[in-house]
Image 1 (spheres, rainbow, N blue to C red):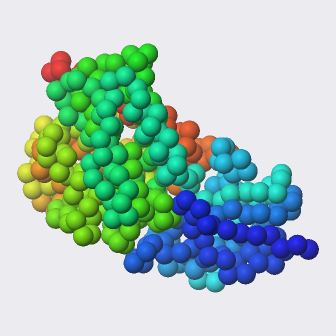
Image 2 (cartoon, rainbow, N blue to C red):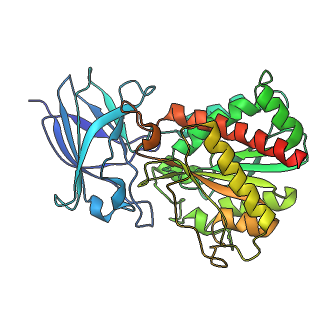
Length: 380
């Protein structure tokens, strides 16, 4: 029997091949550069020829979020357009924790990933397309450690300063799928939602805040192995130029409303995390956050408020995280949006789980909730 071939030598690829026998392989995930974080995988299998593939990802008890593996099914595509799910099983007692993926492709090729990838090539296409829309301007806020631009797309003429930014953690690719959906609304001249938002707000949208980690196939860090969402109190050009660029641009415009878009490995739901623990918490500021969450929950079954992170105690907010820093620094209504790697179980989809399509739709829904929030605020 001819052995399959497995490679990850491409944009955002990540896997190490330990052994192959026929259509079965033993694999490991490469750690982020200069870091102990690992969880993101993305690789291609050649030579499947309709056989059932049995792929063992090993050593996962030491991954960044071991609780992300139970009840998780790997993402798979045969055309790199549609991403479904492959039947997967996690055994913590086997080979340091092993996720076994079983899948029988129709043809010779299949791609597997922790979530549907959003490549840097697709990012370039997104930026180029949206930048051509009427009323949209582009600027580079600065350069990453590897010399990639931190792209920012801006639109709108209103007084409310809105910052949307994603992929501080590069392996959380659902965040840039969300961005694609949101940007399409903001750039669409025929969208009444986009038009009303542009009239009220000035939008600053950073689709990918960590391009180096994205291209390198990292889960959580940049080229220096730094978690950018722990750099917002004292960023540096040596460790986190991406945050230096972002925070500096925000200082120049001010921030009224901000959303930091992420993915969560373990919790099977979409949820928000706020800034309840900041030292200067204002009652009206917190009420604005709570009201936004209520509007989003009413708007879509793909969001809920029951599951999420523990709420920080008063005065204990971590100001190295962007949501807390922006709330404290500007008095902004800021928030972290988390989408699942598994599925949003309150409205589950067995075929795809949480998906690129649902991420993009959530981007549209979040903007719809923002317009409602603004209209209510104007009427108060």
